[in-house]
Image 1 (cartoon, rainbow, N blue to C red):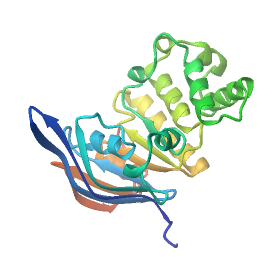
Image 2: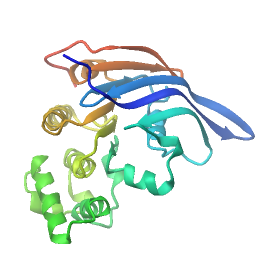
Image 3: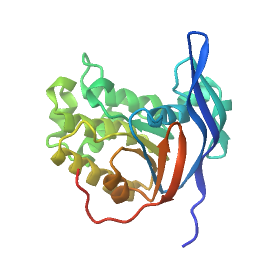
Image 4: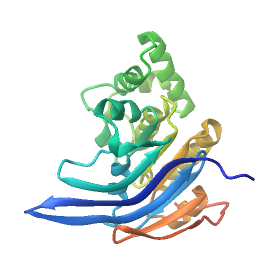
Amino acid sequence: MEDSPTLLTVEGLSVSFHQRGNFFDVLSNVHFSISFGRTLALTGTSGSGKSTLALAIGRLLPPEARLCGKITFCGKEIQNLKKSELYRLRGREIAYVFQEPMACFNPSLTVGAQLLECILLHQKNLRKFQARQVALDWLEKLQLPDPIRSYRSYPNELSGGMLQRVMLAMALCNGPKLLIADEPTSALDGKSCRAAVEQLLRLRSEFSFSMLFITHDIPLAEYFADEIAQLAKGTIWSLRPAISQKTFLP
């Protein structure tokens, strides 16, 4: 099988944070790439820099962070993009799923209103009733038991597993090329974790997006990914093909 073209390339990426007059390194000289339709699992212990790397790709780091190196996505160097170009890129071509679904929602708005806003922001050709149907279709794709009721619910009215599905719908509804999933199953129980992983596998197969899948769970990484990168002390120590496994223990 021929190699797929490269979607994302990270070259010599270093990130440091300014504190009390000094810069403290979090990432140092990180290199990797992700091809179209492929999944790279990024593993490592807490504090190794996994989430910082995820945020750096979309230029979501706080102002006190200093970034060096080169991040290329679809032939464009992300660090050179204007703010208006970054806004179009995030959510449309690069989407995120985070580990704490409740923290990602506005508690005063229904999940439907927030999903609708996400769709209309990036698909300006749609009218509101069309965007609402897109939202309901995605809630159905994510197998919410009652899509209309879920659409009308507030975040606190849904379980953690259901909110994770809504967050995944928000990430995928605009057809991104790359999904960055930062510990998306860590807040879920065993049954919900397994369901979330199987849904991700099904959707990845159906819509052919690439993934950066961040996890500390090695068996899960082996089961889910094509390649595994191990991050330790801010740098990638190993990059290897995943060992195909039929099952994993969440």
